Amino acid sequence: MRKFLSIVIFLFMVNMAFASFSISTEPGTLKVKAGERGSVNITISSTWSDTFTISIEGWKPWFTLSKSVVKVDANEKKSVSLYLFPPLSAKQGVYIIGIYVKSQKTGEKKKVNYNIEVQKNFLAEAKNVEIDGVLRPKENISISYDIINTGSEPLSNVKVKFYLRYKTDKLTESEHDITFLNPSDSKHFEERYTFAPMSKAGRYTIEIETFYSGEKLSIYSKNFDVQSVSIIETTKKYEPVSLGKRMIVLVRNDGNEVAKNVEIKEPITWFDKIFYNGEGTIKYGNVVWTVDEISPGATAELIYQVNYVPLFVFLVLIVVALWYYFFKVRVIRIKKFVIERKRIKTAEIFTIAINVKNNCPSDAYDVVIRDFIPSIFKVGFKHGPRPKIKKTEAGTELAWHFKKFDKAEERLLVYYLKPVIGILGSVQLPSATVSYKIGKREWKNHSESPSFGEEE
Image (cartoon, rainbow, N blue to C red; front, top):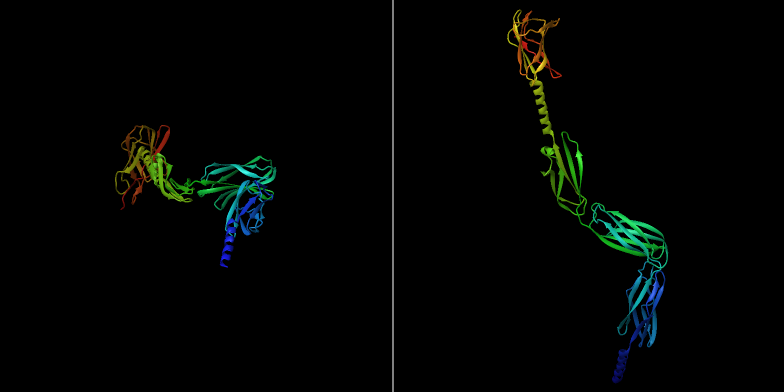
């Protein structure tokens, strides 16, 4: 019995050792058009009854396998179909797949390669994509591309969709319609985009999709990188101030990178340099500020201020000095004073003196000195030139006329007053005046109004 079992086991093992299977497919390359169906038969032959599992390397979503497990009797064949239905969006070209068949009894695995060529009668693709411009914030770029009919059939009503993305963010999109496009013909498009201030650095993606009869024909993708850079922009804001000027320089970083040790210069005139009291330092005709750090989107405020108050005060002092010099010093000066200091009694005599001096830088002409004596006094003269006298009800008018007063010439005019009544207290006399001409201009000056007499 044991000998019989040994013989049976030996024969079984010999059969297993010589058991074999094979895989075959249809010869050549299977050609299938996008949007149409195709199939390939996978035939399994076996010398031993066995169950086989089938798997596909390079599987596509548009593959369908009729069976993944098949039982084959000894010395028979079984076929399994691989169905293909590439959509219009499937990429045109040759797909190489691997067909694996594995024996469940022996574990033996075999592989056969097979070529599938997808052809597209209807195909419009984006080609010749070019990017022109500076790839950084606040810059403009243009993206040009051609949509070419690379299929074998004319296309009508093709829709083109353009996208510009940063990671998952859609920055811009546009759509175009192509009414008709013959094979090998193309249509040119151009997109424009402006990077916003502080646009992020990194990889951006261009996507161009084409559609025909509601089906996606192609997808084109291209990447580019935006620079990491700081972009410093300055604006000026003027604030009204009296006797000076105040300007605020706003320094903003519109880039996507922190700006460090930013130096800002603002021209300053040699005159304003004298009165500058704002921030920063003055170097070679410029106010210079240094900002340690400005983050993207942040703004630094710099103060530029000129204060003309010291200049204004200086000019006022000059004007006052000139006025005083020309109207108080460089004039014909006239002084009127009473020599005696005593009580005013009837018949008491008082001496009145008028001092006139030419302080002008030149001779004066037509000099007239006028004075007025109230009616409570009688006037008399002893020495010096006598004036013209004109009596009125209010008093006596005196006028001395001189044709010329030389430069630095000085005269003393004296007359005497005698009160006609006694007066308690002091009396203030009217001021004397002098008028004269220098060139064609007439000038006039007044003396002070002297008082005299003493209280009881």
